[in-house]
Length: 67
Image 1 (cartoon, helix red, strand yellow):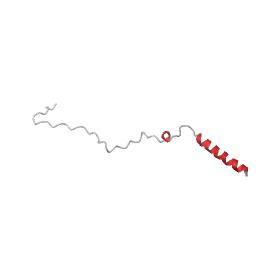
Image 2 (cartoon, rainbow, N blue to C red):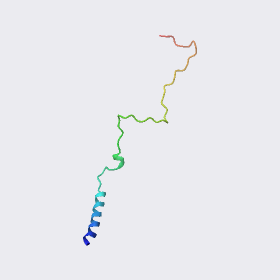
Image 3 (cartoon, rainbow, N blue to C red):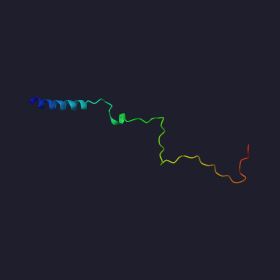
Image 4 (cartoon, rainbow, N blue to C red):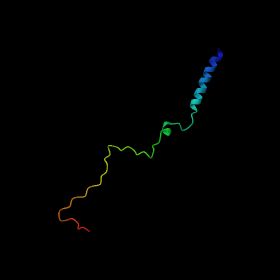
């Protein structure tokens, strides 16, 4: 009977000791999956696509001569 009372704290103490000695580098941030460079990132809808500006119209008769 006395053995049960001694075994329980010993078992609990060993369990806590093993849990406290987790290997280094087990943080969630370090084990988070990295982005695959082959997968294109999703485009942000808040960012408008950049378009090249259209050429300004020229007044009639001021066009450059064809070359």
